[in-house]
Amino acid sequence: MVAGQFDGRSTDRKGPAVTAPIALSCVTIDTADPRALAEFYAALLDWRIMHAEDDYALITDGKSVLCFGFVAGHQAAPWPDDPAHPKRVHIDLNVADIDQATDLAVALGATIPEFQPGLNPDWDNQLPWGIVLDPEGHPICLNLRE
Image 1: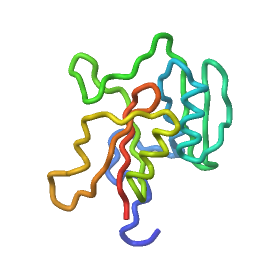
Image 2: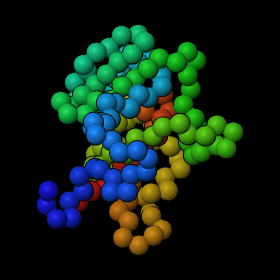
Image 3: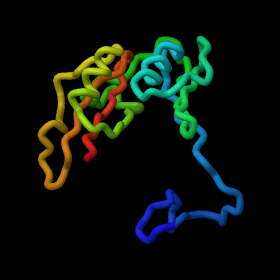
């Protein structure tokens, strides 16, 4: 490992020693339509669909996996946050151009919420970010990266 490079492992793990590695398998997003949401994210990320059924779907880029699980009557929490319905999940994506990424997401079925706190960040050294809502309303932060 190169000095200063983060390898993903905690240097101050609490609890008993772990001798067998533990790795994240996937993050599952609750949805009323796993297949449709998998198709949206696969197109947005240029990933492929590994598996798609009515109750569960998975997409991958060959290294990471994103999963979608059926929940009857599921509705994403409102954006911006509402204390009565807190946000359950949101995705952060690094993009080279916020406008192009937004246009692609919208063409695939996302919507643009009015509340956009990241387009004019109010703290030093913060690059801007935009927000779109996936077809079910989950927020996606589009983080500008140089």
